[in-house]
Amino acid sequence: MSEPIVDIRGLRKVYTGKVPVIAVDGIDLQVAPGELYGLLGPNGAGKTTTISIATTRAIPTAGTVRIAGVDVVAHPAMSRRAIGVVPQYNTLDRSCTVAENIRFHCLYFGMSGTEARTRTDELLEQFRLHDRAKSYPQQLSGGLAQRLQIARAIAHHPRVLFLDEPSAGLDPQSRIAMWDAVRALRSEDITVVLTTHYMEEADELCDRVAIIDHGKILVEDTPAALKAGVGGDKLYDLHLARTADRERLAQQLRELDGVTGVEPTEAGLRVLAQTREGLLPQVITAANAYGLRDIATAEPTLETVFIRMTGRDLRE
Image 1 (cartoon, one colour):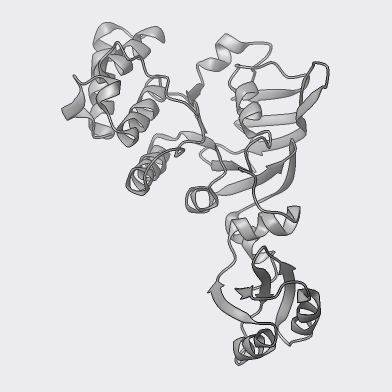
Image 2 (cartoon, rainbow, N blue to C red; image 1 turned 120 degrees about the vertical axis):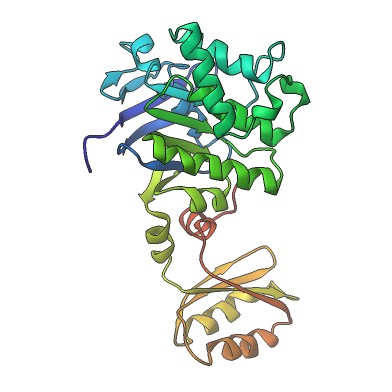
């Protein structure tokens, strides 16, 4: 990898109190220029704390974070010039119009009045907000407000954009529009680091992802490589009438040619398998003896990777 634009080494954050909480526990990660990188994991895994430190909103207990070569703790003001941030919650100024939210951000970062107006017009067009320029944030839908937050965050031409749970609370149509807006940032040579607990979002957007839990990175790779590492081409989710003796069924399924793994689920069993002609009928025949109610087939996802690594479903 080329010289990383985001370079995090030995990052640790402990919140002190009667019972100390380790939010980040020795994270190392590097993001290349132009990459779209995802931190994937459940709520409370340490994703937001990592982003907060990288964007100078929190101080680490140990470790270093460099953005475009600048230490964010030693030189926070300098590093902020290279950083754009869209936090998890709406931070738009409700007393300013859509256009003013962008223009005042430009002025804050030292642009002249003419430069700020020009940049504002560019971003209103780019994010399809021009017809809402005189509207106020509270008059916007969730999707439009999120696009405005992204537009404002890149107004000063940052080199890295941090998105913290960017699609939280958005409807499917708004989420897809937001994804399109994020992908378009590649043309501006903006590196994107996003946190999410939506598996589909990470799979759809990211060049590489790190799965994080309990403040540690469990694994890091491309979405395709992580899914390939599951060891199966297909998933069969078996909904069983009886789960008390499902381990006996699981053992029978493991002995079938092409089955690479069997895991318990709340409703029954999940079978991971290679593509083999005639395998599915064998699985159904074996499961029928245990009261098979339903079977669903799918391909491995990042959620599959996470559950296999942690042995549990994602926390809410």
